[in-house]
Image 1 (cartoon, rainbow, N blue to C red):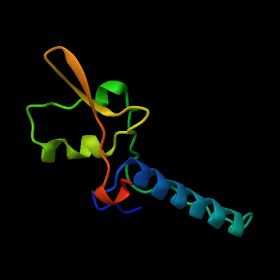
Image 2 (cartoon, one colour; image 1 turned 90 degrees about the vertical axis):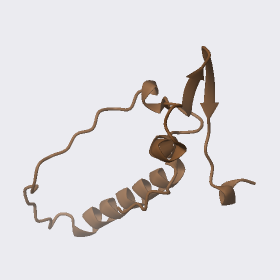
Image 3 (cartoon, rainbow, N blue to C red; image 1 turned 30 degrees about the vertical axis):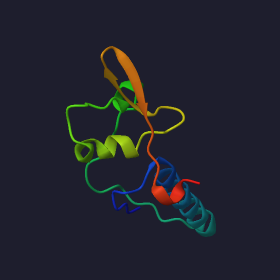
Length: 99
């Protein structure tokens, strides 16, 4: 999968779903004549995101916070920040996606 850095959460999930379906279809087409091979390179593991990962530092620029904003799920775990002991929720949409 390739991303250009402007995709929001729903677009990322859509690309992941399409890639998963392609992989499954390729597997089913070749099964049972599948040639296995060992993975090259070092394995990578990422921890599960937690609600605190969506917290935005209000002292940084929007540009620096953009990746955190774009990967947040607007419904389940939107980005947020605190100001004067009040929590504020920030949701992001592309202009052409808004109706």
